[in-house]
Length: 281
Length: 281
Image 1 (cartoon, rainbow over the protein chains, first blue to last red):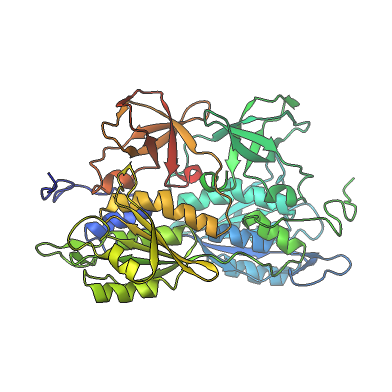
Image 2 (tube, one colour):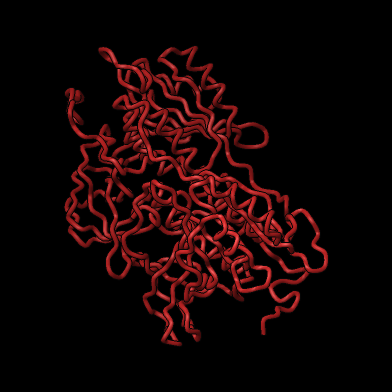
């Protein structure tokens, strides 16, 4: 009764894992069990993070007139490392064409370069120009979303294909955060060979929400669960693209289409996760 | 129109974060913004992992008669590190009382010690005895669950309270895996000051499942999502507590109560996550 015959679980020649499998905890055990002490994996993409702007000082400094602390740099660095990708943190670049070009050239050595600031329409928004001068082709600039409209995306190609993917995220911290989750994270997961969720997660609104604009709105929400296990989304108090506090307590962003102003409670809406829902809600 | 008045988002004296907040990506940005370059945090618990058993060889070795490769050690180490806790990996201890005592004493220096093997009723199951001799009090031994029944839990106290929490997980790899997710992970999250989910997540069974035993059954499942966002759980092909392959492809464990043999499709059952559902399903 208590003896297990040899070969009952697996036999020589059985396929244990297929290519594309994410190596989770149980997989590590399985690989050890079958003696696969060394396995070929997809290399984790390298990501350079570069904040730009004359107005930026580090978190430890007290800003003087016309200055703000650099929140995007540390935030995006944390995002990259939380997801398990390889970070290359570049020092802040002021709005000087030559310095910017030098920093960007360093960032282009990575698989992905994420810039913040300098992509809107201001006089000192030099980033698109400098990128073009370094051979980065613009794929798109501006998306009809709120926050995050001024997002810039381009590629640097070499003979083998795309050599570096480049994102210019807006300088407003929530815009930058939303751009990261909607675009950068998605690309990084694909480059790393992760299977990405096939359909968006959804939640029911616990209270009405409005979208008076002509862009898709991504509003921060906390999530709870109904008796049947559905997610229930409650908008956090949030004052727009400069208000990180309204994001810090959120579990997800709800995606509210334009073209209909009032979205009643109980509406089923797509959500974009910004936490590990199984641990945090 | 495009000028933001000073102090619109926050003002001096506002509370930005309360104690107990998990420092996620957006929080890093928020802390940087307000100049909180250094903050007090709960220390991440340290976890010692110790595999026991004369039969164990490392993953890189070819087992000879009566030997198996150590899959639990690497698997539990991966689990600890994936969750972000501090790992102290101990070398494998054979079933020798003195060697075991020495390794266990080292492990007791951590916040949590996780042993595998040696907790069942075999002649060489020395772990409970050795733990007792080192001053570890047994809190419980054996739980009416399947797999994972022989799980052992105890505490070593000092004057200030509990000095080390000790788990003895069964040697069968899936039992060990399930014990980790149900008990060890939960404790680690609490020690780290994480808020743990208040109610279990749930899913609908896509097909019937049976529990003929008198213990709660934790069966691996893959998760998909219905049109309304409910999780739908499909049992994986799984042959019991030695079959890691049936776990490696799973997203969660469904918890099936004893006392009712047949659970029809569409039953709403609690699930225990073993992945980051937002990224993986």
